[in-house]
Image (tube, rainbow, N blue to C red; front, side, top):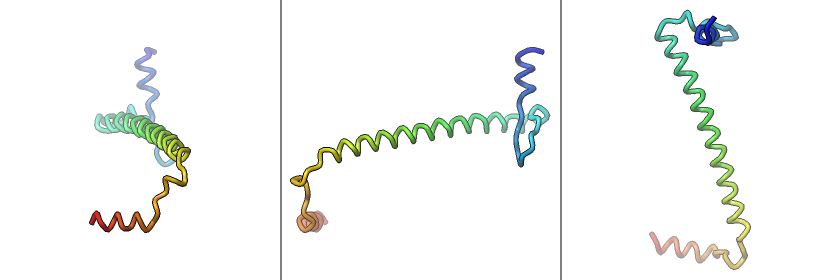
Length: 87
């Protein structure tokens, strides 16, 4: 059996705890299985990117927090006056 035949033979689709032979699907069904597989891979990659961005944001947050001092505090009253003046 050739490698291509073996790969074709191994394509299955799991639904409701049942495994289906995707090679018996219509062409539209086969295309849908391929698209689902690619979409799942893209979703996984995007979720990994989100995790990376969250980690980066946490690092930036720590950098900011580490430099905060009391002399940087803005008094609430002064901040409210500043907000009122801007509107």
